[in-house]
Length: 158
Ligand code: GTP
Image (cartoon, rainbow, N blue to C red; front, side):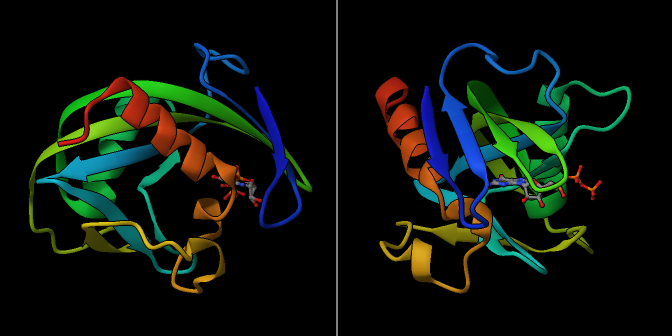
């Protein structure tokens, strides 16, 4: 279990165990690979980030993850696996988010990408994400680097 402070000075607990904080988390976040690149989205307020969002009523967290990838990038998930979970003690509420790793088989062009400008494909994630204003705050704490390590540990990146 890791504990650290995020961009907004909120406490974050992160673990790669099986659903340590909640069996039914209300938020999801998906680290995506497509054709040997990282697939992200550009959120209209927050900036560039891996896709994700809230679990809707009558939907599992896994279903939400697949849906959010499609809505925000046009990406069709080929396979997806649970990686870990984190809990953010926000100013007003506590949120729990599942982290997934997905391989994307293809990108479908869409008329709109919900609250985002659509897909962003990167060969490499920049070194300076923490200070880069183009990137979302959710990419600026230890969740990103630790999740990438976990992804690499389990799956050979192609
Ligand atoms: P609304 O229903 O729109 O109000 O959303 P919500 O309050 O249920 O969830 P929201 O996504 O707004 O998250 C609440 C707070 O949790 C945010 O203001 C953030 O500070 C924090 N938060 C959400 N997602 C993340 C994340 O991925 N990383 C970090 N560090 N904080 C997050």
